[in-house]
Every structure is written in C-alpha cells, then in structure tokens.
Image 1: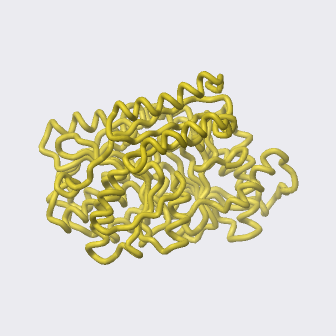
Image 2: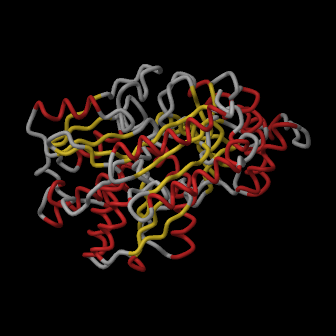
Length: 446
C-alpha cells in the first residue's frame, strides 16, 4: 500500500482527505500517460453517491486538459467499467466508487485494458505526481482532448453477460437488493431479459442512501422481505456491484464461502475447475476447507484482497477464486469480480444440479466467526508490537486446526481487523477481545 493508493484504489471522505486536487492530479497523470503510451482514450464510470458526479467532472476535465479523451459511461457497476475498459478499445478505465463504504466516502479505482487493477509501479508514479505536480504540459488549441458520453458501453456489457449465461431463468422467482447503488438499472435489465421473475428493492438512489442499511453489507431488509412471498432466493449487491451475498428462501445467509463452495462443486462436475483448485483468502471459514476436502478440491490461500486472488489465478491458471465477502472471480471469461456475473453462474449451477441452495450447501458446516474492527492511531505500530504478535501466535496454537485468528490492517481505513473462528461463539469472543483489549491497554486505539 502506498501513501494514497490502498488495496482498492484511493479512498476517503469526499472533498476532505479525498480532495478535488488529488482527483484532478490523478486524471491529469492518467491522461498524459494514455496520450503518450496508448490511444488517448480513457473510460470513466461512477456509482450513485452524491460526490461521484463531482469527481467524474474533475477527472474527465483533467484528462482532456492533458490532451487525451474521456468517455463517460455514467452510472455503472465496477465490473461494467472493467469490462468496457478491456473490450472497447480503451487504454484504461477509471471507476469512481467507494464500494460498500457510506455515501460520504468516495474512491478512485484504476483498471488496465485487460480488466485487472492498474500496474502498481505506475501507481507509485501517480503518487509522486500528486505530491509534486510537475513535468506534464498543458496543451492548448487543437491539442486539447475532448469529453464524450458513452452509454453504449453499458449495453455492450449487458449483452456480454447475457451471451455468457443465455439460460432460461423463468423457473426462478428472485428478490434483488441493489443497495441503491451501481446495479440499480443493470441487474433488473439483465435478469428480466433472461425471463427471470424478479422483484427489485433499494433501486432508487438519491445520492446519500447507497449502502444505507441495505445491500450486501446489511442483509436484514432482504432477509425480512424474502419471507413475505414465495421467493427461491435473494441476491444482494454492494454499492459498486462487484460483490454478491445471497439469502435462501428462509432468509438464511449464503455468503461468499457458500457461493464459492457451490461454484467449485459445479465447475468440478463439468470439468472446468482448472487444476482442481479454489483460490481463497485467510478469511474463508475453516468449514469451507473441511467441506472441500470431502470433495477432493484443493485450495490456494492468499492474502486478503481480490488483487491477490487474481494474482494467484493468473500465475497458476486457476479457474475460480474469491473472498468470503462475495467478491468472486470466475476466470474463464474475465479478470475481475462481478456480483451479477456470479449470480448468473450460481443460478446456472442450481439448474445444473436440479437442486436448491439448502441441498447444495448441506455438507458445508460454517464455524462460528467474529470480526471486530478497532480504530487505531497507527496500524504499523500495532502490527509490530511483539507482545501483541506473541499473543496472536499463542492463540493460533490453542485453536490448532479447529479454528483460526487473523489480525490485519484495513487497506482503506485506520482500522485493525481482528477475526477469530472457533468451535463456539464464546471462544470467538474470548480470543478476539484478548487482542482488542491489548490494543486499548497499550493506548494504540483512537
């Protein structure tokens, strides 16, 4: 992680620590980079939060002021932006979104023209330019760039999805929570075109209601609503729609681990689980590992973050990987996580097995898990404290192979995340707060 760019782009409170100056300088650098190394074509997408149009305008203006051309997708999901950047003859793509964060935050994510996160070496150079904005000319006259609307890119993305999964979904009755975010139009369009009987909730964004007690990070509304009618399942996206969480017909949560289990089983059954391996992070439940063992499916465990999941998949030619949060990558068709694509693949798996979510996950026993986020003054100070690291190692030995503890910094916020899995909720609570209490006793909390 750098000074500005974390594991998922630049993120912060809009117009405060994520300022217009920072956004302009990022756009200026990218425009100059595109003009000098590519075709001077950059596509921009945005989510529905209040500040997104403000950042869209400033970044597009910066790109044009450097002599490159900006193409505006408008409101779209992060995977839609990544798809268009890869397939519509662009040098790169910029997504304006803070994903699952509250509306007052925003972020800037940069994608290469192969659908992956942007080159880290160039991100370092962008950070240097943010701090010292020199060396880029200001062209005038006919050398200025232009700004174009590009709504057709959304149609290209939707058609791609429907061609990937051209299934008749008329047998499904589905409730969908769009989190008042990026998928508020795309999801219903695609599912309706595939004949799905779909009801959409939280699809009326007003700039400040994105992720507000709805979507993949707040499933309570979806869990209650699904019990009111005879739905087969419910789908929940986050603000920028690269993640998916699911609830079954009874309102039980089907998280990313459940989804990966079903998809791994499905891909293995159709001989498409390359190298018989699923890529997961340390946050995946130990129950998933035990269930996959019974299926004879291997795992590659990587650091938390979709960047590291994809890195392993590309390096080792794996077909499937993801996170418990529901950020799942199906490598056959793209290099990015996509909540809607994951949902379509999940529905295809259900059709393939002629089954339902309950039956498909009955052999997956999820261990109790507790995750607590502790705000701290300095993340590195906590992680380098020898007493704390010694305590973590002691807990690992006590848990043995019947649980796990993970203590890591947030990539986007001043937080230390402490997660414990164990045989009981009591053990989870005991071990988590042994670490949290040590952080507070040492005065590291903020």
